[in-house]
Length: 157
Image (cartoon, rainbow, N blue to C red; front, top):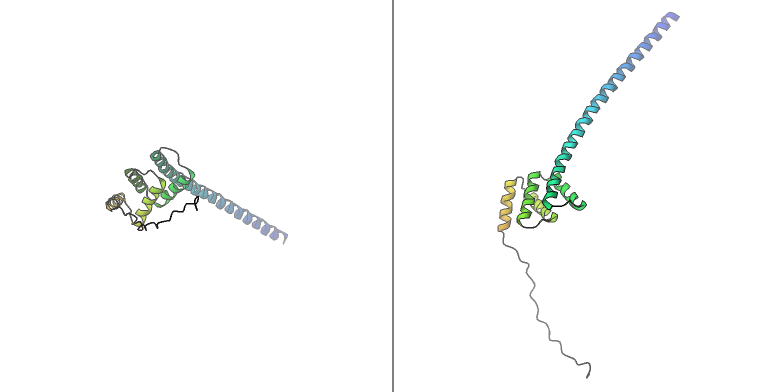
């Protein structure tokens, strides 16, 4: 009986050892797979950051100076919501209007977004239509004539 119990105990030890080995192999394979996934993610992030960084460099060159934190925030928003060719076209449009201003460029991109502009060619057409519009002057309310204020001589009462 002791011999049978001993064989069963040895068999259980072997099964446990085999199970531990399988678990170690699975964990090792999982670590390798996770490492590969992280490597791909890091590579993609580096490529995305590199592309974004190149866009920022082009915009800084356009302005001829480093961008302020406020401007960087606006530029990052542009990069996240617009394709690079449209951003470059907005820079050109602002230059045509002689308005190298982040807010002006932001407005151009917003108008294009509201106008469903998706390509550079559509942006050019949209801008041509915009430039052809007559300037809308702000109507001033009609000035009322001043009432005649009587003159009072304080010295002579």
